[in-house]
Amino acid sequence: MKKPVLTIAGSDSSGGAGIQADLKALSANNVFGMSVLTSITAQNTCGVLSVFHLPTTIIEAQLDAIFSDIPVKTIKTGMLATPDIIKTVSQKLATQNIEHLVVDPVMVAKGGHALLEEEAISSLKSELCPLAFLLTPNIYEAEVLSGMTIKTIADARAAAKIIHRFGCRHVLIKGGHLLEQPGTDLLYDGRFFRMYKGEYIQTQNTHGTGCTLASAIAAQLANGKAIANAIEAAKTYTTEAIRHGFTLGKGHGPTDHFYFLQA
View 1 (cartoon, rainbow, N blue to C red):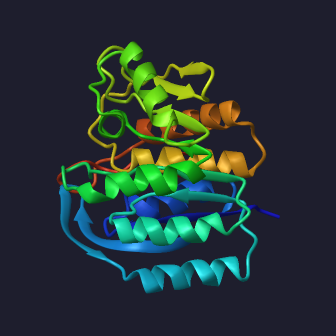
View 2 (cartoon, rainbow, N blue to C red):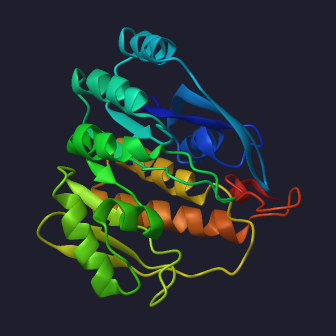
């Protein structure tokens, strides 16, 4: 039987990122994806046009519906835009026996639209990070969380140490935009570092890559892989999804979550 994995995130009406990308990546990595919606975005490949945050009562009701019926051991979070949403989700998750919580601290959309309110950053650090098995910030998000500029691998190491102090068990700084070694990700477990060197693919079709990677990691963890191997498998999958990405619309096209189904 396929393992159930829950994603708690916002929607992307263009289908390239957010909960839509999460569900595609979960399915592609052989788990059964479930979803709790936190925000609705009017979005396309060029950017976010409008956002509506769902009331916390309906977010809580969605979580209760899942948890009262289906045992969930692995959860991935994405867009949790406000302090109230973070508090609601964190309090609910704290009551569950979760083995792996993968937190993707979504802050800004590809087009530059803020997806995390500034006052919610402290809530993310104090309420959600301590529950996280893995936190997956990109370079920009790691800079915001750590309060430092990241340009080199040494900078990324220093930032990972700061972020780890918020209470998460592991930090994966995604280095897609790392100036020194583009495409290199860095994992820190509080004691040791592990680098994942990857191929940097020059393409505009990268919409939803962060959502895709975090969801793929969650799926690999749910299927029993240790964290180092789960990240490696998810990174390989995401790289190929980017390689097979395609032009759709006028902006950043999506990756191909099911590239392996091509004839």
